Amino acid sequence: MTNTTALLASAPLGPLTLPNRLVMAPLTRNRAEADGTPTPLMATYYAQRASAGLIVAEAATPNAVGQTYPNITAVHSARHVAGWRQVTDAVREAGGRMFLQLQHGGRVGHPATSGLTPVAPSPVPLPETIFTPGGHRPAVVPREMTAEDIRTTVADFARAARNALDAGFEGVEVHSANGHLLHQFLAANTNRRTDGYGGPDAGRIRFTAEVTEAVAAEIGAERVGLRISPGNTVNGIAEGGTEEIYTALVDRLGGLGLAYLHQVFADPDDPVFQKIRAGWPGVLIANPVLGEQPTTDTVRRASERLLAAGADLIALGRPFLANPDLVTRLRLGAPLNPVRDRYLMYVGGATGYTDYPALGQETAQPSSSSNVALDGPRVA
Image (cartoon, helix red, strand yellow):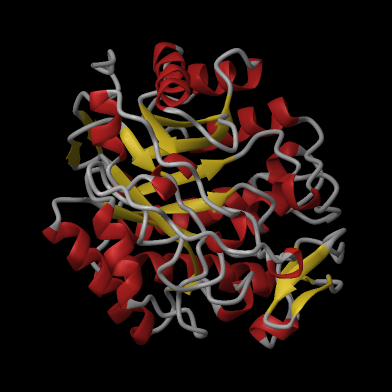
């Protein structure tokens, strides 16, 4: 049995007491209906993983123009709320707890998917193709958001947070990472505005801060987390002044009383991580850097290094994707299931989704024949 005492210890999070410090990170899986409504298959998937201390459900859009890829989830209609309620009921019955990530894609979107021209801080297109119902297509130039667009979007996030609680979630995570809309406002290469939402650090952090503050005012700060990815260049992002921008963001939001701050790809030796930990007064969730095929030992070692460096909770993606009983496997030191063909992450259906076996249920698993043209979006 491995030494996972710290990782498997209980921990407080806002009004919750988590049974362990393992968080299932939000993972885009493209299993929703075309309109963004969660499906019964999704309820099965999340209930299988209910032993996580906390599940942060995959990115859900707060409005129609925020949609990124086909068959991702949403939370801006009564039908979406009813669909998510089936998921949260299943997870709660299995003993779990869930937050919902709220994500607006910004320029990471396409009219072929949403029927709408994407919006962004500035009219700077994504420098790569984007996955649509018809396959990969060139990105379009987004429409620069007006002051009214910004006010409306802030209100949409707050409304989506209320919808999430109505759907049975314990709270929400505001997504300001991985090159999506809020991160686009933080980054110098995607935010070329000259008004109060651009320019110096105080302007670039303003939209993320206003969204987070509005969501906290709507449902209570103790039920709100914020996800960031300092220095991440995914989706064509170049922040410029990473340390300064996140120092300013932490300074503005540190006194709000949020449930947590969630840092993607955290490295305990990185000065930015260290500065964020020193400046953030509350719970810090850290997502370690792991390889394509993490093992029990690499997960444990990376997680325990982050806990020793000051993280309070550890968010894991691929290990939870392939191991519905990840907590048990880490407790016993048992081998992890390998993550199967990337194609299966996004194609819909149970294969590569709900058919990963728990310990003692291992059987030969089918493989797909990868299709590069349809390999879908990145895991969020």
